[in-house]
Length: 352
Image 1 (cartoon, rainbow, N blue to C red):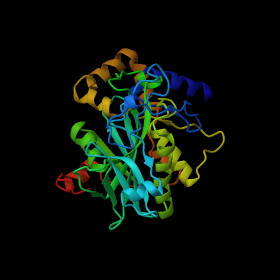
Image 2: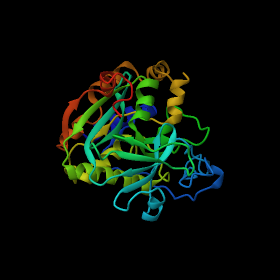
Image 3: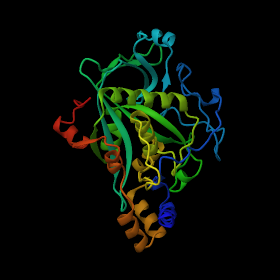
Image 4: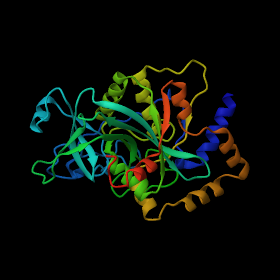
C-alpha cells in the first residue's frame, strides 16, 4: 500500500499544478516567516486595511503581492468596528470582496442558516475542481457590507450569502505556469467574497459548472465554522505560502471543517488525496485572455503522460471530497448546481 501511494504521488506530480494533490490532512503546512507591511506595496493610500503585503519566501521573496484583488480578512477591534457603526456584539471584518472592491462586513452572531460545499469543476481529462464554502444567512440577519474607505460614494449593501475561498496569490505582474504550484511561487489568501462576484468569475467569465452539497451541521457548528474560517484568515493574513501538496483550497477547507466538528482521521487509515485546480485573479485572467486554455492543458498532459498513466490516474485517483464529507458524517443532500439555481431565478442576481 505504501509503495502504491508513493507511485501515485510520483505520477500525479507529472501532471503539474493543474491538480492539487493532498496526501492526507496530517501533512504540515509550509512554514513561512512573517513579513512587515511595505508602503511600496500599497494599493490605496486611503485604505487603512490594505495589507501592503510582500511575498514571504521563494524566488519572489520581498516582492509585492497582488493584494489589490485578493486578500485575507482583518478582524476589527471593538474600537475599529465602532468607527463603522458596528455594535460590539457583532462580528466586524475588513477586506471582504464584492464588485471588485473591499468592504467591512457586519455579521450578526448566530446568523448562519446553511453551509453549502461548492465544487467548481474544470473540464479536464482527469477530474479537477476548486473547493469553497457558501454561507447562507437567515432572513433578517443578512450580512451588511459597509464601504471600507472613508468618504466612498458607495452605499451599504446587504448580502444573503458569502463565499469562503482559499486561493493562490501571485506577485504583481507574476506569471503562472503549469508547475508553479509545486514550488514557492504563490502566497495563499483566505477570502470572503460575495456570491455575486464568484458567480461572475466562475460561471459568467469561465463557464464552469458549480456543484453544491448541503452540509449536515448543527446550528452551533454552522456558526462556529464561519468563525473558525474568519479566525484562520485573520491569523494567516498573506504570510503563508500556497503549496500543491499540502496547503491548497481543499486542504484548508477541510482543516477548518475538521477543527469545527472535532474530526480526526483514524490511525492507519488510508490517507485522503484531494484533486483540485488552482484559482486566483491572475490565473483566471490567463484563461480569459486565451494564454492558458484547455487545449494547452490537454497537450501538456499528453506530452507528460502516456495512455497507460492517464488511464491509471482516471481509474485509481479519487475525485475530490464528497467521499471525505461522507466519511465525516456531514454530507447532506446534493442541491441544484449553482448554474441551475441562477437560471431558475432568471439570472438577474436574485439569488444574492
